[in-house]
Image (cartoon, rainbow over the protein chains, first blue to last red):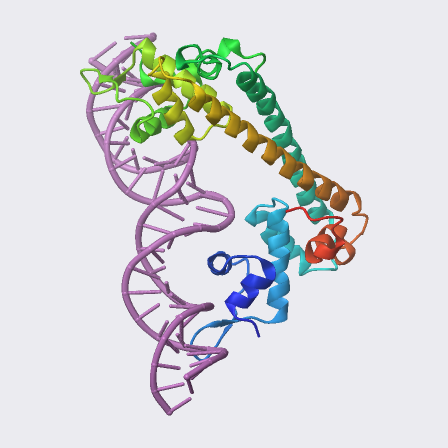
Length: 138
Length: 138
DNA sequence: TCTTGAAGCTCTAGTGACTAGAGCAATTAT
DNA sequence: ATAATTGCTCTAGTCACTAGAGCTTCAAGA
């Protein structure tokens, strides 16, 4: 049996976050010790590791809830799990594209800043005057 | 004079967001009409456009507060504004790098999913077993 | 066995940047 | 004059945690 602190060290999920996941119903409420402290089994350790891994990959808590639900029905077709992952991939790609546009714009803004005072600072001017932007970044 | 709705249409910032910015002290509380409705000048329109533009570029509200503060002192050296923009650029680049790692991992996970049931679905297995990951993605 | 310090408990509230809704009042167009 | 739209304030919700107060329990050393 693991204490909540053991679980935290082994999975890298912080203690208050584990309690939060329990409140959200992502992990089941575990057994308690005589003194009312949480005691986890290996199975619960594995579920938390699963959650940690999925969060690292950017899945939303609701997605993870679905994935856990699915993993409990190994006989079902896996199209749904696949779809969740593919949607996540699409959303990650969209975020990358958006951030690259911002990168380009910020490079342009910062590289042009050779003014000595705020009055002719390109950063401030670029922000004040959208027309200075090379292209639309939103 | 512009109503809050005019301002919203001209800047693309939603009405409740304008009121939120006022509460946060990013925009000053404007004049009011006889009937207590907000009435904005052109100057306030421009400030809101500045804020919108900076938000589009991913600047945090606190950064924008600093940039506004700086733009009110055009005689000062602009190093501070430049630094804020450069830090933003660094943080955008870090986010891109992180998202690219996730993209790679998700591509691998989704492309391998040819199982018919959840039991042999690569998506679920990859999430359950971190060892299946090609490299560390966090 | 006693003590001490770390770790655990619950509960509330805060983060950032908005967003939604209720229940009104003012303005604008017909 | 009336109806539709827009505006007002206030509270609470979003997401995924994080922080803190004030208490109890546990584990290890003396």
